[in-house]
Length: 192
Image (tube, rainbow, N blue to C red; front, top):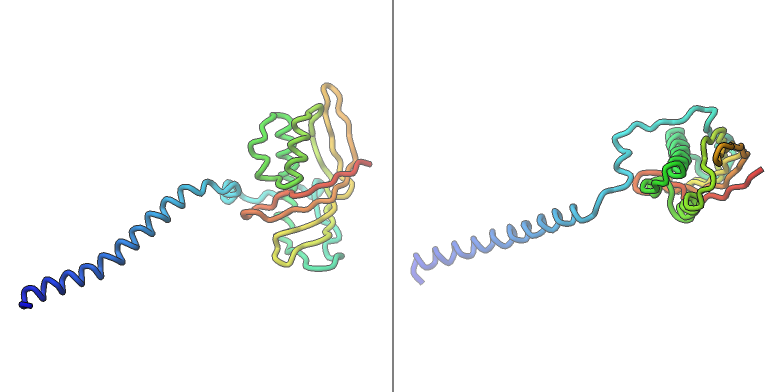
């Protein structure tokens, strides 16, 4: 081989060694770009820009948090759970009044979601207010993703036509942390 042929061959080899990793990198970047736009919106992302608003103490608060076995959530996590639980009830009330259930999956999931949808479909009366939620911790998971508590003797004011009536209610609730947002996963109501 002549020196000119050797130079061309060497240039070809160096070019291939640079071109192959660049083409692999380009294909990976294009694949990541396409995947990013195909995954859709995160339902909880709308809350990341908003401040967490905790309702008044008279409306909802924790009681007996330290008197259970197992891990105890921090005060900040307690406030977040209480606020998201409160917001779930507000969303249920709003859905009953408007019939719009498009945001219910943001606040409710699992069997609780199915229950509230049935309550909206069979709308004979609607929830006007809810107050006096006293939360008693029953379980908090080690990985901070599941909480079980009792909501003791809170008040629901329901309206049906021109009448409204008040119910004293308690609930056993399980909430899960899903995509950065606490959602009601299971709820069992008892009316007194």
